[in-house]
Image (cartoon, rainbow, N blue to C red):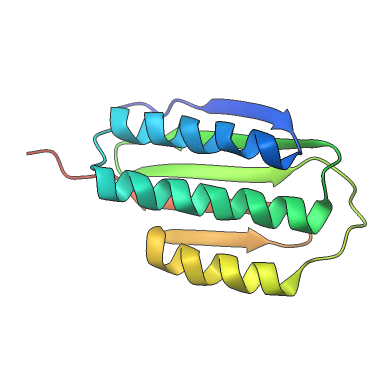
Length: 125
């Protein structure tokens, strides 16, 4: 499978976060993830959006880029807003605790307000 990139931009407001979760769920199911893994992906995406909004606020745009490959579903989320916003340490700690339990790999770049999630694709039967 070649790598396809799906990009989603939405206003940096809480009520639009559901769009990222819905897109993640639809893509995960299409890629063969079971219901449990799909739920884990959705939870990680939700928490990433919460972290971005608490760190940068509800101004600007949130970008979500989905990159499925034969081995992983990689999701990169970033906030395209005010670069001078402070990092909410409590929310970062909460995100890290949840991401550890829901995805196989993750990275939080606090200075650039970018989060990368990766979940291994299921092995086909």
